[in-house]
Image (cartoon, rainbow, N blue to C red; front, top):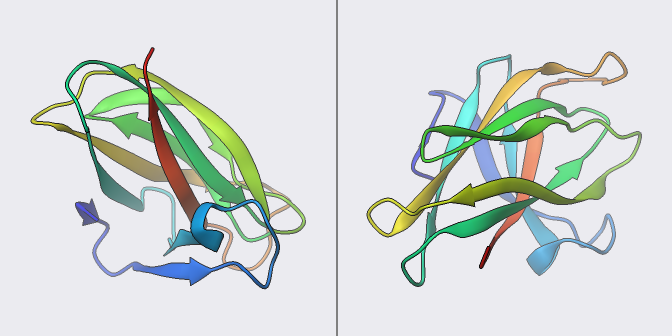
Length: 134
């Protein structure tokens, strides 16, 4: 992690007991507590030039809504992380971005929560980031 809201817990969460569909059968699990909580993840560019940034995330019953930014620029639409049971969200297109200093900084920030969300309501999970040639 490059940065995060002070005090929020993050961990690699093994998802093998939940099912298939996650890369490496795990995700970065973020125990966000309120709107405005965030994490920033560094993705190293293997070569120069713009890349389409595609995020794979998770939906679950206690997950919030998120907005994303890549290198400080708003990216993609708002994401609703709610689902009645944990499941991969599928690819989320965050647009084409130019690396800065050989890397992309992905920021995921909680904007709120789905009215149907239960429990902590603001958690979220990030699975993988894929960089594609545009």
